[in-house]
View 1 (cartoon, rainbow, N blue to C red):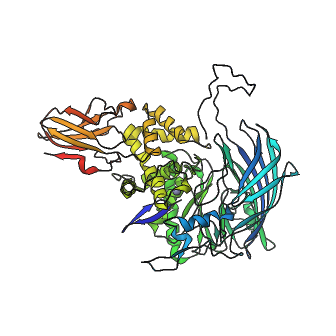
View 2: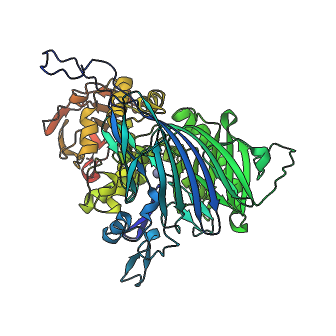
View 3: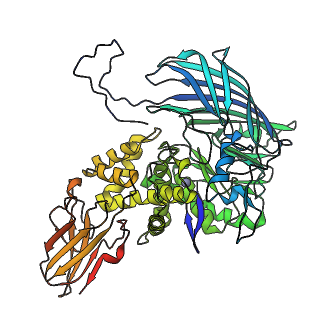
Length: 629
Ligand SMILES: [Zn+2]
């Protein structure tokens, strides 16, 4: 998702499991007769095949659904329960989302109405005042497991199902469900009649199986943000008023019966009746989203590798020109991400006007469309990057929010700022603001449970972005680029964890990086290096912050020459390539972390010294980073 908020007077734009652990054969025989534990690669992931038949009523915003879900239990465990997400239930007075909105110190402006003034605001939850015909809901009407009724209970946004028979390790079960849904007034992400008049933004709209992985169930309530889903295939038949144009995840199977810009060239589409049934198939995804409006314009262009890029936006004179200019820019972004991460594997991607800002979904994004061109392209750059960092490299973003938002922000800012000296500068500014506010929480905080939205936003987006930008400083830009490609190769269509990413970076670079992953993501410790003293040619540096780093130092001598002195960090056990190839590089002795100071002798008389002129090291106090004679 893309996020914007204000810090003081300055608008800052924030953009929005595998475990590779090996279980070792115990050397001492245990006395119980439990299943033997063997040494092998233990990665597994569950699998789902959804078939859904949806009948949408565009008058009362209710939809009748039939869902057949074939669930494959690839885990080593027998399951006696399963859980579904019922996200739309969040949009009801008294829900956990409503409660959170009323208690967070800085509620999302989109979800509140200000009944006070700008100076003394009185922000009221928009969920709290929803009427029965405006709320969202998913009501389960019947549910069977392999043809037999099961007992279930709706608890807020989660359906708890007690199985008749366990789904044994390696077995499949078929669940058949009838449900009735109601689309809420648009409060957050999903809903009807968004502020730009888009009729239906259908995200997180169906009963969705929760993920079960090496950590157990992730049946998280829908409180604010971030998601996790089971990999699988979707086959969705959507019956809706024939005047509505639909865009979303999946390939349309019957374009010549539907039209609306999907039909083959020179095809005359004949329809009868009041409704059309759209048939979509989305392979190897972990979500399914759609949007529909009777006034959508639908354009299609070809991107790299013959991929169809679809654009659906309102027939509105004020935005048409920007939405046309967005199209070649989107094709350029696709090519950039293909090269810098890995090839986009589906044959289609859609940019759809809808939602309430920008949010990523499988094979598509929903973004608001009444924007200046720069913002329209910027948000698309961010959301499209999520097609990789979430919809291919599907981290559990409820727990590791920085992996999807941060990596997305990194790569989209790299794409937008190609050629700029530091395309990540705003992330460093935001991070410094957070540190100085005293409100920082570690990035391991569960996405919904930060004290403030501000602390979440900067930790996930900006500090997450710096994780990669600063990794480039540590291991070298060349090795970072290689790491991203290799991460994609090894982890696409899976659920990587922070450790999985770290291991790829370690293997690519030869660096040991556990100190970085743990220090940066699991603590709020900071980096601060200083020039302590220069006496004659003797230079003493000081590590004032608790987080260690290797040091890039540019020394200028009184004779006008410059030298790049590289001080490797001992615990990293490796050296990067020359960060300043134009300069003579000297690799100094390692700096071991426990020593607070480091002294060395320069070869000539020193005129000036600068620690990290790239400013990619997240030094929280740069005032002590330079010396001038
Ligand atoms: Zn995002």
